[in-house]
Length: 318
Ligand code: FUB
Image (cartoon, rainbow, N blue to C red):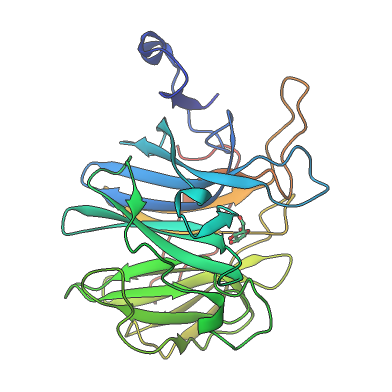
């Protein structure tokens, strides 16, 4: 049993009665995808996409983003949707992968949406709030990245999956992309680019970049190949060059996509990802390629600093 606490659905009286456990997937009440975790003091905030496809035959149906929180990585409280794709006035749909960061006391939500016909294609927007659960408002009033700003591929979905990295000195970098990995420095105001968009040199790239630092080493992990695995690379600098370390996680199971978030919380490292492995429940169709669910397992480093291959489990965090 998972310990999801649907605060937005259940009366508070239910909360005390829920049992303890941490099986994978961690959330079974709704389908969740594209996890992005933020460590904020004694709390881990987990933001996910929300798969609502009625079956696994068509395509993603994703309208809003969900928030969950935990103080022990096992007990997750649900805080409901924090935003919808069409809360950005210039966006029409497709609440795809996102990333929340905290800077100067504010919560900045970078996310993927489909832009309206004035700038056709996928785009990256940024919303801001004083609270990790919102309300979030469009921080810029227009998209931060639009399809016309990148020309490396003919696809209109090559500007997706934002992942923000904040340097110790406060500099902010936005990684993003599909088929061609890219990054760009952001201005201190978090809503403007500070320089040219650069291409990142890593092999087998598909999407889902995530940048993090451990000790003095920078890590770039990303969905690679197709069906997707997760690959990893290391560098001494956020600007690269990146040394490719190979596959970090296998095909996640029952879905072609793979999307990871890596955090350190209370001295332990975690790999947060999605699978299509939700078992059927109450006569409902099971998980699958467009009905994904977030899972968490431990992440370990080798003595040379490289990441150990992830072991995906159904038991989850023990
Ligand atoms: O969830 C929609 C898309 O699928 C994401 O943007 C990609 O990372 C992949 O997981």
